[in-house]
Length: 74
Image (tube, helix red, strand yellow):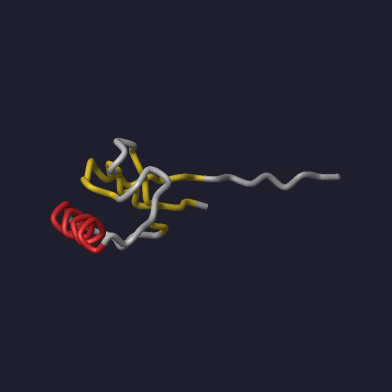
């Protein structure tokens, strides 16, 4: 099974990196769409973080994971 998630990486008010993961992002996201979403998240103070408010967008990435299960004969 292959899964994808969008990771949005922010800087907090205490200087910590904070990653917000979005499972199954839509295909063909543009950098402009991602930047707009991150700006809204910061501006609306949507998430609480142990490191304080999110104050800056540092980056974003799509993480793809492939898992292969094996059936064991018992």
